[in-house]
Image (cartoon, rainbow, N blue to C red):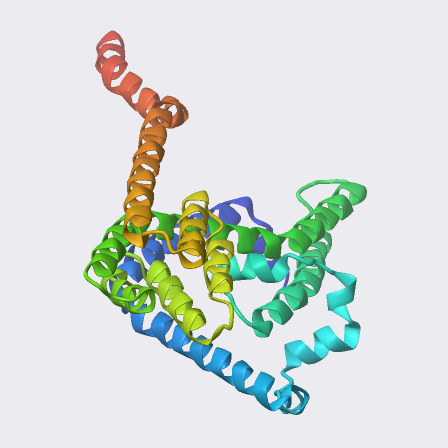
Length: 322
């Protein structure tokens, strides 16, 4: 046991372990996208499940038997923990369903999982940090400093679920907006060819899936909501809420106005497609303009030392007479 403890607390062993983990993470990051299967079928299946859920809710509203059907819902371990500790009231967040929807997590299950990990993550991180700093390696720090470090990790665990959801929503929004102008062009062609808006959404979702699975999923879900919601305006508003992007909100507003006032839908879609293409070009120019500033630190840290070695190395060796 003493040999194991000495090995674990050895700084060289810790650095070697960190380096091995970083190499493993790099290999996984490079190989997983090449080995992963196409997720389009899985996403479309989830949208079909959402369609069935909307259909079920519609039947429940007609039959007025929703309470009986909810009573037959399965109670998982996470749900039992959340309901027994009343975490929904303890960590009440009115906007959590909307945030999870923007990240692609729909339904009541992800809400329960979010509240569960908001309770479990601080406890796990605090307990793990305390055990490591107190009994494995104290890094030569005073006791109060170690306790503060463990407490800080516990507080980080409380905010970790929110950070994960925010990051997932941002990545999903970027993927949607990359292909959204092309989807609007396809939607314009379908509408001007005489298709209804539902058929146009369904057609575009199948065509745009090769570029953005997330956008295909959102368009398919909008098609389902247009079919089963009583107010079609809600389907467009839900699309704008799930994406949380000004371009999509403008398109949703134009579609709502076309539904209400009977304005030409093709003309509105043509204008919206041009605005979204200009917005995508502006974002690309903004990223390109910020690239030199972002490259300054990596060049100073990684490139300049190597350049100095290459330039001054031969002169130094000649000065030393080697």
